[in-house]
Amino acid sequence: MKKILLLILIITSFNSFAQKELNWLTDFNEAAKLSVKTKKPILANFTGSDWCGWCKVLHKEVFSTPEFAKWAKKNVILLVVDFPRKTKLPTALQKQNNALQRAFGVRGYPTVWLFKPGEGENPKKDIQPLGKTGYVRGGAKKWIASIAQYLPKK
Image (cartoon, rainbow, N blue to C red; front, side, top):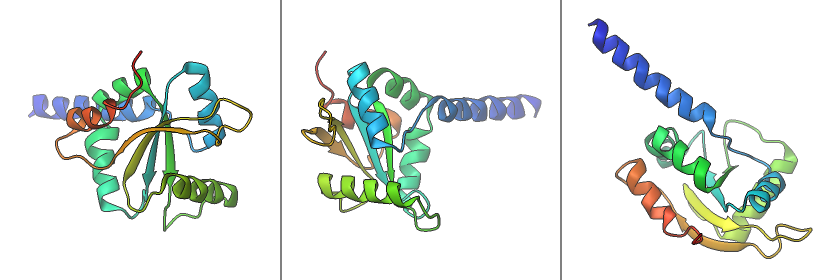
């Protein structure tokens, strides 16, 4: 019994560690600056975090795993573009998220876009979409493969 409890504790701590390690930004301009500086594309998760069932499944099966955390830290800048129903976002964030939703033609959730921001003074101008995905059944490994194919070649 003690071994089972210890195993559960270890697994839970790995998931918590992976979640704490990831830095999901909400500000597009901050993500764009970091993307240009690090030469990593932005992975934008368009989600309805507090109401979308498939968004919650994607978060649980992929985004909260150590495998995703390791991959994301190496390859992308994370941006969450949220459309919650129970929580009211600040007006500026709502406007930003709505503009990004229109720019990328997002019509359903979850939708995850990989893209490069523009490098001039206006990073929203000259955005270069690289690819998109949504929920992919099969866990972190399969999901990562569905988006990694769009990463720029180094």
